[in-house]
Length: 599
Image (cartoon, rainbow, N blue to C red; front, top):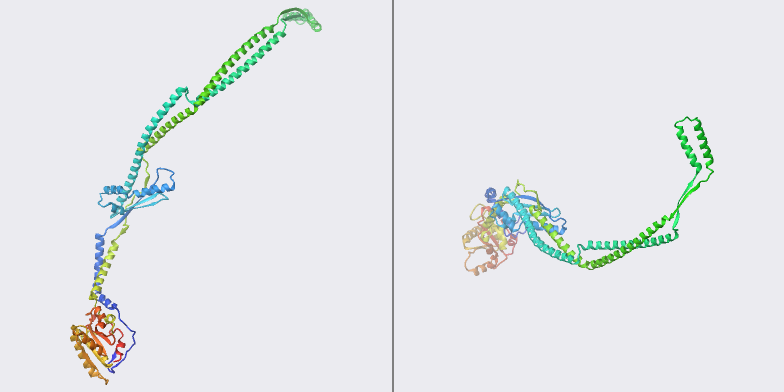
């Protein structure tokens, strides 16, 4: 600042060089500060409006989840196949057919893409657990949507399974008819072959024939052994017959008189004892005689009384046995020959059976195979028909969707908060655009930055006049330091202001000047003669350009030095500053260099 009593330039505090700024943030803050109450009211109104819009127009989203478990109908699947089928079930949820059926049942007008976006499916392969989540604008709509999707999925899976079973049944019925015709043909061929070869069932027939050959051989061997035994028996009996005499003592009678007499006396004694007493003389006599005979009779030998001679009795037996043995031998030999012939025939039949065994096995294997195929197809068809009567459910609902109490996602809060924010941003953007319309410079720092010249005076004059408020006090410093100073208006509208400012500065400088060196102030109006103006500017020691705050664009200020043809010894005096900018920096740029430059 300048001390006008001593008229000596000095500064109360040395300041760093301030080249200004493209946009003075203080000015922008001042713009917002002036409309702060409007902004607060706007925020309140926009918040209320945002809440109303969010409640009225912004929908909320409710979610309901159903849990299902997939139990494969085919047990024992490997992990890769299990995962593939589970993934197929999950992808079936959003196929267009199921979505269209769900839309039809719910009576919705949304597209299939919109329905698919409102549906999410998650799966856990380790547990085969499937979660189906449906979204809706209301809790009931979300629940009904999730339940309907689950029902459609189960119906679709069951319908697909039934269609597969019906298709499999149709295929198996056709194969069964073919297998039956093949079985009939093979059975006819086998029966014809059996009739031609006289067999019933070759394995049993062959086993029976082998057993017959074995039994016939064994019987023939036994017959042969029997024939030999009977022959040897007949020979032995014939030899024994030759060794026997024709007559033989048939019987011989021996007589023992003592024993006979003793037996008679004993009989008499016993008869008398029944009628006589034991001490009877007759009894005693008989007892003595019996005792005497028993003592003397043991030493006497019996005497042959008579002998009978006749034909030897064994001759007839031997002759009969020899005849029987000869007959048995002849019969055994005949039986052996017969059994041998039968064994030969049985061996021939066995060889014949062995020859046709390959063909019989082939035909019987064909019959067995075709009949097994018939039985297999019949069993499978029966199982399929049983399954069609009560198809198994692969998807089991663990828990149905519950009615959600709170929305899972909602943009109401975001809209309610975004409306005031967007409103404030738009209003602030509009205020900033309005405050910077035309890209005009308003403060000393902005003008100094764009013009690249120091600002030595910054005043509300001539719009607001008060003591020590005119810029001529700063202009007087140019007089004090000496030299010629030229005031140049920025445009023709500033000509009267520049003339008045020049008169004020000239009067004050003439009254207060203390130096011996004369100072001259020239007032130059802006004319169309740019060459003359540039010449005077170059001849002057200093040039002060008078501008109006907010009256000139940054492009005019940027080209100012180029248009005047001078860079050094030039400064700017800002007039017409609004009251809202009056308290900003009064100077900007390298002011000290401007005043200390040699004249």
